Length: 58
Image (cartoon, rainbow, N blue to C red; front, side, top):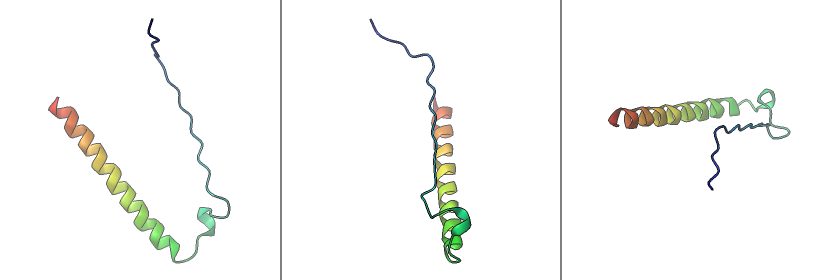
């Protein structure tokens, strides 16, 4: 007899590595983190647009 899962709860806790909090960045690293953030946002937007495009094809 198969088991059916009707609800699945996932909880994730993310902690920054010790000694590397956002308040303790080196002066040059703020520029890199901004570039990294923009790259991450661009990738997320691209994936969302792909998902929406795939849904509209159905």
